[in-house]
Length: 242
Image 1 (cartoon, rainbow, N blue to C red):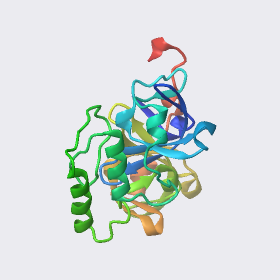
Image 2: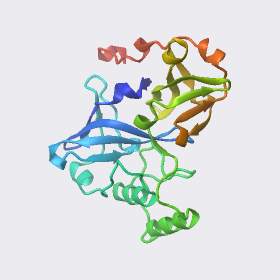
Image 3: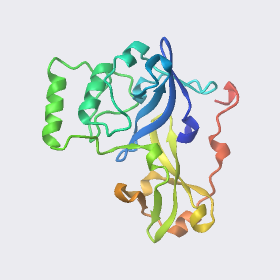
Image 4: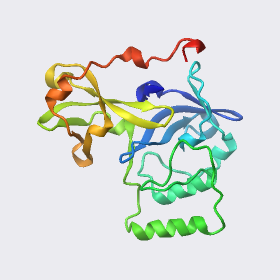
């Protein structure tokens, strides 16, 4: 099942003992396109803070009521490491958070992945050794260099092999794998065109300093893409359509 990230913003999130808040943003890995975190703004019960929730904490979504239930308690969330989501997130903070929730750590350049429900119990001292190991590898170790905000990347210019042709409007997300599969590109201001979907496999590079996404296809290729059909990403109105 695929949806635009925009359609998922505002979804409520419910702990096992009550509502947590609502989804405000997504953080993704710019190498694997995995969704690493949902950013949830809590209600008055937790001073309207923003907390990070990994997809592996999610249970079966309630699409009809636009609700993401999770296998966490409000107390677990309240006692989680304090992370300022408006600042770069460090490797150390991620390790502390995953240790707190007993979420699963996985291999690769990113620290953790998002769809497994399994947990890993770290022996005493191992968590600190992981922190030291990563600090040694990355002398800067101040932030996760591959963790990107969907909100901030929206609006980045799209550069084809022969020039600019649009900007990032949204992202297409596969809910089963929690991976971004496509970019939704708005070409209107460049060629008076329409919105089109471009698979992320065509992303050659992202120039973060220049707010630009470089593709390996031409402007003509993008012009010939079928217009985005918004009705294909509308939530079903009854359970029989799921």
